[in-house]
Image (cartoon, rainbow, N blue to C red; front, side, top):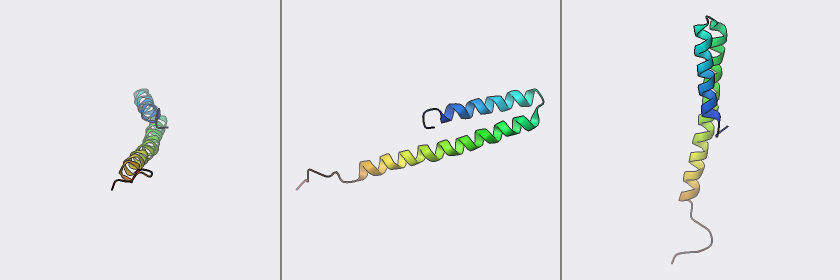
Length: 67
């Protein structure tokens, strides 16, 4: 999800625009809501990973102690 999530969101948004242009509003709204849901999942995972990286870098390293 972290690798392709952002791209999938754009595919769903493009699909929604295409469907809206073809006057298929119910399907277009479904694609838009799908894009929104995927974006929320993507951002939750992305920010969670960034938080984990930040906190692991700030944590003291085990092994060598500086005196």
